[in-house]
Length: 413
Image 1: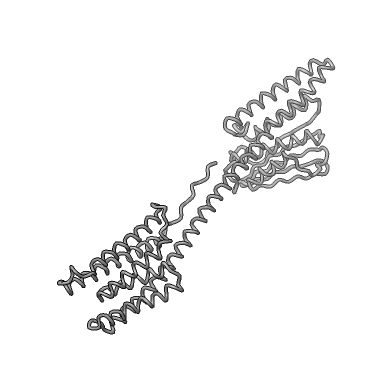
Image 2: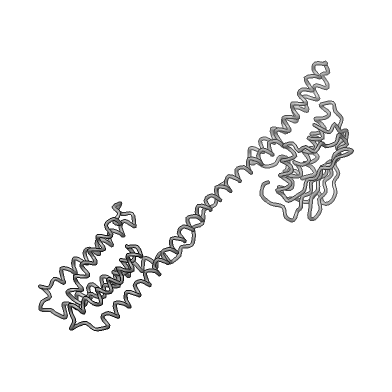
């Protein structure tokens, strides 16, 4: 039995949203850095070459790009060197270069927004929030001190609004990241649970198949060999008494039983199908009765077995129902022979529109109520087809099997 493929969970767009947010942060940093540089060059083109702004911009861009590429490669598993221990030094370098640019030109104030996001992401909240306030103070009031001619109140309000939005977006990003982590954990648990379930179903299928094969062997090969053994012992005693004619009949019974048992075993090995089900169910029951009667005669024990039919017994029935009825008759007659010491048994088959009933009655000893392996296997067969097995005892024993024809399973019990 091969377990069915494990379905994969439906992917969610949240990881892509997080990637876009990170990419947007890096693009915004690059845009604001280049925008500030262009504004500074356009404002004072004569001192652009000699100004330290350009080297600071190149250094800030290089350090920022190096850190982000390193972190991205480590996240993808492309490098084993963890950048986390170096994150404080990297953040301090980026911040120092930004402060230097703000001191030189008010055009770099708006880099505050991505810097706030970086501080909140790379430090604890107890550090990130005060750092955000300090960064805003630098962006708002350092230009007022160093460039009072270009400073306005909007230069303080604008960075404050940007810092607030940066904090809000950061915590929204954290909420999305937590949701993605939760979904990933749930998906992993779901995959693990499905794998365990598939393995459990596989093991259950193997155990069910073992049980089925065990019942088939018990009801076919084992019963046949038991019959051969009993008749062979009886034949040995007959030969010891010098009764050649009776011994010949017993040997004929042994030969017939062995041939039938060999045919059943071959069919069983070939396709695990039930023996004698190529015939109609009544005919298969007659063969079971004849074999049982012949064995009893060979043992010198008289057992009168009759078959009664009622309803539409000629109609085709589902193969699992046919097999279960036949096995029930074999098990019941085997118990009659082994335990009941009966002189008469009656097998009754009734086939109606919605059900099949098999009754086996004998006039032998009462049933002691203990289920052996054969009856437990028969009970499992009947239960698998949603049927009922009832055994009543008193003056003899009656075994009844009732199988519905409207809800029976079509798989092998």
